[in-house]
Length: 229
Ligand SMILES: [Zn+2]
Image (cartoon, rainbow, N blue to C red; front, side, top):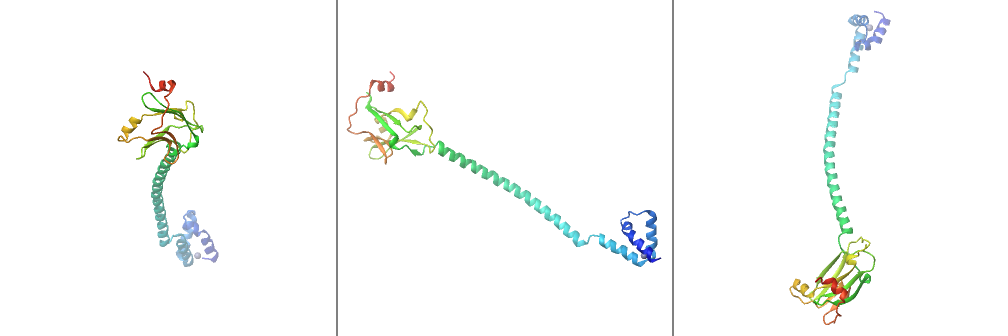
């Protein structure tokens, strides 16, 4: 065979290898390969070039394992981070609602005495001490804490949340008549004698009444408010 014929064969050898040439070309190539060692070698070289080496296949397999591992790890970490997210959200909701409650509803702040006004301290016909109490700063009041120390000092402590609400009419506890039934209060506190009544805290307060103080009789108007016969 001529040298030219070898060159032509090598041109179509890749097509032959891929089995995409015509039957005529195919038989031509085979005929030539039967007696041309160098073209046969060329075909072998093609095979080697196109075959993927074993270690490379191994690497690819490992890579796909790595991908599998990563995806399963990712799935696991996704579940984990979802759970973490749920827990964090719950804690946040609790903290926010606790904070909200504390700021807006829990009565944790004492009303200062400079915005308290006490007037018409008097005594009802049944002995109860009565007075008018007003908070003058324009904010609502809905709780007072009653407490007595071991010396018989009785404290009525008005308390409010950190975030105050504007007082709306009717002003309720922020502008109302208060009464103290000393006998009842003493019974509640193991018959300990009440010696004095204060509005405020043990540290900051306004005296309403103390033992020995003579109080005027309550007006008819006030009397009618507390007796419903
Ligand atoms: Zn040849």
